[in-house]
View 1 (cartoon, one colour):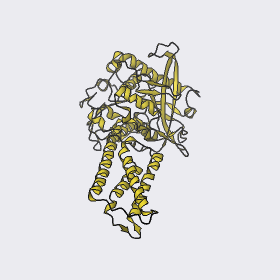
View 2 (cartoon, rainbow, N blue to C red):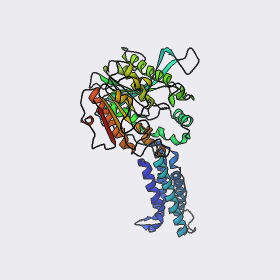
View 3 (tube, helix red, strand yellow):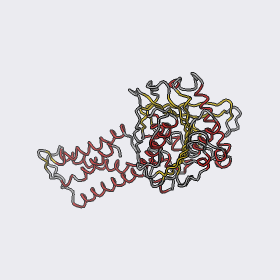
View 4 (spheres, one colour):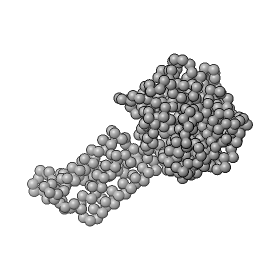
Length: 469
């Protein structure tokens, strides 16, 4: 729970236990103290709303606060009554006292239970030397018609969110985790089948990134990474990893692939939800679209002073160091672009199925595969790994399921019941993910060898480590 929420629970328990206090506390009457404490407790609600945000998980506490406020006002009325002959009310009986305490325990326990299931989660603190900036923009590929519509004038558009190193964040706002809350919650309800209220608190989650911060001047240029979400995923689903990479000096561009993303909310307010077609209707066609989206972004980034690209990136990107990575079908995309485009130097896939080309061709670039039981096996009997002609890593991580390879680790423990998350602790999983990804990129894209890639690590016994040659 957050700080003011914890303070609210403490105040409510103090009010519930007031009847155990002596009637006189030094020179203060107990009713005066408790009456005004109920006012202070009620006043904490607007403070909480202003600095932390109201959320439905705390409704039991909000209602209890109102009840204590009403009771406190009557206590103050008794103390400051204007009729001198009016008798003072008798103290509450044992049953009333017991009811108040039980009600407080039930309300607090209910709130804590709901918060444990649906928390306002906190993203891990990035460990790199840089602060983090973020910005979003859209691009239109005039050479490709949109496959998912019949309008001949509808060209393929993509949404891109970037995370990058910065030195100056003074006076800037920290970016929200979700930019268009209504679109996101609606997308969850439409595609995942969960009521939108389940994720209605996501707008209260803040990131470690600062909106539209200037690029760092520490280095002349920075290496470039291209990320794709999973099929039916979202652009910010791996924010923890994006922030970690940016803090280590990488510029990461996350691509939303419209109609096959859970939701794509463009800066102009237009929203495109996931198409209702089955992904397996044309898996090869979808892979071709996603790969072309990725390579189109590279093309646009390479254009000097491109007005369609935020100017903060002009002249700051090192195109001799480009890598692709992605989760699930996004990882399938990273394999594809590494195989078909010489500009891509390294690649990583998280718990990904393989396309036909990846199964048949030999990977000639350093590559890392991270798996759980949904798409891998402990023996790493994997075609990409087995056919690789250069350094390839296969990491099987025990205790995971498919969505453990994204921020979904932190979203809700309820997802374990649905088989979307494994038994591994969410923060532990994100630590493993970021440590190995940074080690791989530092070694094979930056030329700074990491001992973590020498073999199995005692620090991470969950990871079954494979490496070739």
